[in-house]
Picture 1: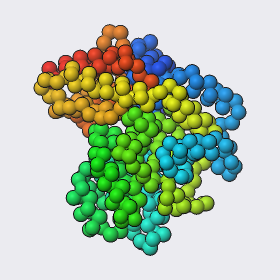
Picture 2: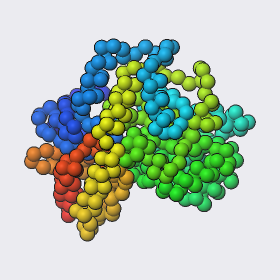
Picture 3: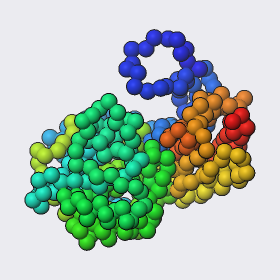
Picture 4: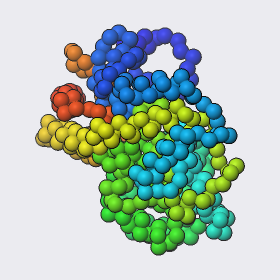
Length: 401
């Protein structure tokens, strides 16, 4: 554990846990004191390949010796290679590269607004959802459905109409009552919102409604994309294709990168000078993303995410069913929420110290949902260790309530 009394000049925008991690291998991490941890969070869905994957390390070392940054004033060949691969995997047409999920979502919002203006709508609106999370810039914060993170940053950006998830009557009423709406912006699975999935038939209905009304369907895959659910993108379980798709987090296994994929009417909305990024699409980030995708394919990690994710969910349900205070386990692939009937924000700190041989890295969101986002390389044996540790931790927590 780190010294909680030490003075730090880092701005206190996070309630950090008292541990400083120094190195890792696969789904394991070690801290400054040599304590070992089983990583059930993977940097909040970022470390797709776990820690220290030898192929990724080799590729990044090579790239560091060649080029890290040149700027978008020049062609970057790896951008073209990655764009070809992503558009093929997603059945889309073009990609803009940036540095984060926030930036990817900001670009999506700009695309929607410009799309509306091109159609003669002076105040274009975007339909968004309760409990959504799209980022912390003023625009993405305004699209986010969490008053707690919005408080103190008013006035929010106008132009967002909010409804409940998976409610078709509410959807139709909002669209009928707001003729300026030009796009629907939805997470295929809400991560920060508590692992709430958009129903597959609801996603199919959204695609149909957008086609009928000439709206852009924008699916935020920042957290649930890049293979996390067992398909490359979570909306693919519904058999649909969006018009705009922001990506980030796990796309480059820890190297900062974001991307916005577009197709159809959305593919020609932005032109030269209308959007940009100094660092976006740099050779190092592009190489990391290309290598990440190749390793996921070569090692069969989509199937592994499906198989190990189901093992985790079934094991947690079996181990906790019948416990008073246990609500449910839900999710898809390696994006899992364990909901309790009461606030459980103390569990991440307790998990660090739980167990004599190793601790666990977990997260709680929406106060009552224990969120698991393990790396796609997690093995069946490692999943069993996580199941055992979490069922013990949660059982003890519930017994004290």
